[in-house]
Length: 447
Image (cartoon, rainbow, N blue to C red; front, side, top):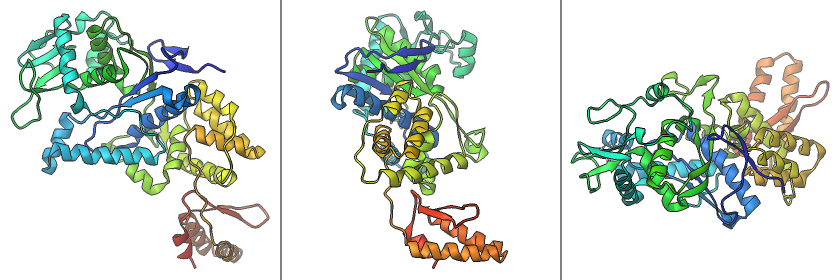
């Protein structure tokens, strides 16, 4: 069996993956802060690490892989949103967590083994903070508890940043009670109208970074195999996780392999609300089925920047329109070349290239197996009224022959909106097939 190779951000290179215990492979991935609709940037790590989860289950067995993806349900943004809407924090987090899980399921993501909420693990966070204070790695100041970065000599090793770069990159809060600007909050006081928990340092709530360390340690152990997340989390979040976890438990190694997916641009520009190119998964699901969005998200290697464009979605739609009819009713077979591509640091572009080759060669069992391995559900081929489509195409051909291009374009637009894929042939009649988002009602409306 070929060994899985993964890019380890900590090692700055590709390594052969050897789990601590092949019967208990463990992975932690940073999940969402639940205060709003998930955007396409939230979806990328969920889909990328779902592919890795599926690969690990394929290689080591479904019952031998534990995947944890947390839910951050206590954070200032959540409190602000609850206040803005005049509802409870619990209402906000329950609603947005449900939205997130529905969106990820629509993208073909399996539920993780564990989906812990931060608020369920506050006692473990308090215990870890107490340990850090006792070991001399943290200190209390004005109701806050801060991690003393200078106490951990390897701080910055994951990201490879200098102290000046780290201060700039972290946008550190300058506070008079900090011993050093780089020190970060483990615990902070809560006002009477804010959520809080009793602690040795007074009523308060945890800082953001401590939750992942506490939950990973509780659910996966002091040392586990893989920690994943977006590249934007490498510093300071993952850097801080490493520092506090290794100082609280020097005998443990925390995560052995660190994996980071690249960011997403939209039409060549960084996604932001101010630019008007902020895309939620809900918006995108209105435009294309989840399986199309999944293929588009995997079309670029996970470590690269993904440029989200209409063309990328169109190409994903076309690929599924070709693959779907081929694999309908087919029993999935082995797809060794696709498996090999995924075992080489999740090389999904290479996997897709092989799948296109399989489709051309008529290797339908292997294609079905490849789609199953990558979590791509074949779109159900809805039956189209062939006589109606043929009559519309005939009317379009007549309009084009009469040089009535406006009428011809209107017919083509109607077919496109109904999800009928039309392939014009040079010197011959147009070919057609129902696409993955075919809508019989919209086709019927064209009569």
